[in-house]
View 1 (cartoon, each protein chain N blue to C red):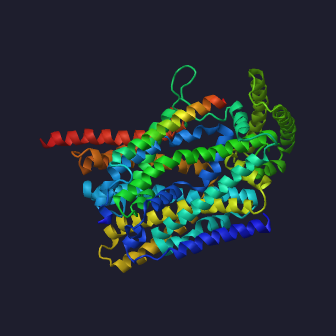
View 2 (view 1 turned 90 degrees about the vertical axis):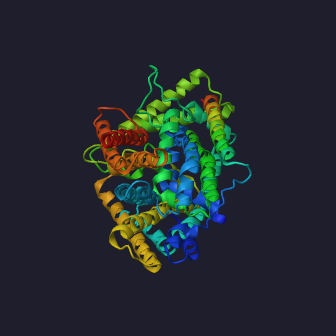
View 3 (view 1 turned 135 degrees about the horizontal axis):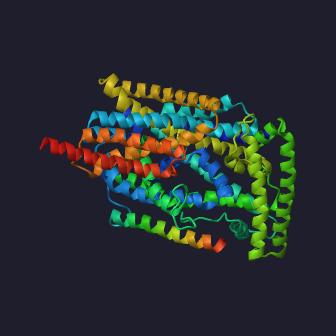
Length: 572
Length: 40
């Protein structure tokens, strides 16, 4: 990175920290520290919800995802607007009227203490581990790309935000998320504008989409049905899994995960909470669409220009210095030839100014790309060799590699800053929620019931700091275990979310079901979900993890209704 | 009191807002289908 990039990076990060500290004045009690005295307007709630959900990986992965797999990833968000509606009808009024600090408090009022403790424990376990990975995942990418030490990158990624998160609690978190999103969107728009400008003369946005479309990348809506007519349950992103699976995932995440519930509980009224959530339902899908569109533009750019064999340079260097160097050379030579053929073909189309490909041209282009993809697959096999044990997935590196290689000085620093601040937004909200659940659901229940407001405030800050350190330690530990952990912890959410959602659905919609039936159903449901996950991992069944949310919720509801009817009969 | 304010802005009822969010989703899906077919 150049000096200008370093200056832009440091100034942007410092701006966020200073702004967070500037907005940190709160009353010294739980209401002030965790709920901003319930005074936030809907647009701050909206920014806070969006900033919590969107991590660095959202902005890094999505363009790469579009580049490799097309735009169908957007379907993953189709269930979200519907979930926002259900939340506004059911969850929001109850959470507000009961003046809760955490979602799990409600479960004690509705069922009993053991159900509340079980769900808060599942939340702390899942969120604590996944926040550690939220630190590690972008840190390893920056470390690999820029040659930074991974341990220090983890500390910067997860450490600096602790300053304003500990000091200002939910208020600082919400206001910094607002500023962070403004910087992120401005930077992404600027990057998108430059990609279009870097296309050859006479080639515009529409032509870029034509090129992407001809290669199957503009596949926004897919049905998920196989050629033989059967539904592909393993297919992650299609209309059905997006609407149903995505609905249950969003309902669990926004309705039962304290990192989100804690954001809309800061609203000054039920109305402001509802508006924040509904606006999220309106803007989320278009926002994801635009991020994916950026990936298509980068894809089109690399059709007119030479594309790297593999976007993570560290892995290429690793193989170059191994016994597989000769194999790599062969693959690189063949790839360069195919890549030149592709560039020449696409440039010839640009020269005619006509991107309406004939069937023969489409087949020719598909053949060239098939050849390039096969060579990339051969390279990935080298990366996976036992003596290399590298990461064969370069999706997260595609956009940043483009940024580093082609964007002007200053903008590179700004986009690296985007990686940091988008991580900070979600990590800060996670630390705030981990601390609120620890003090409200655990400390004040089991350790010290008689605390003053001052004690609450002081201990909450200590817990926020403690969780911050814990998550950095998890991130450092993740480095030693390897890349597979990232995927494992992403799936971790789906292992718990469905079960927790089932418990909340029983609380809201099944008035006759009591605490014991719910508690044991949650335990049984968790066993079923973990069982399904193990069967899937061992290839006994084929099931995308997105379905685990829906299955978990349905299984818990069914078990509880059956158990309750048995216990009712026993009493009769 | 402000905290109990549940009056929806713009529309008379929250149901209208829910319909707006649902219809906007449907319109987007239809446009995406059109987009997919047009560029493929």
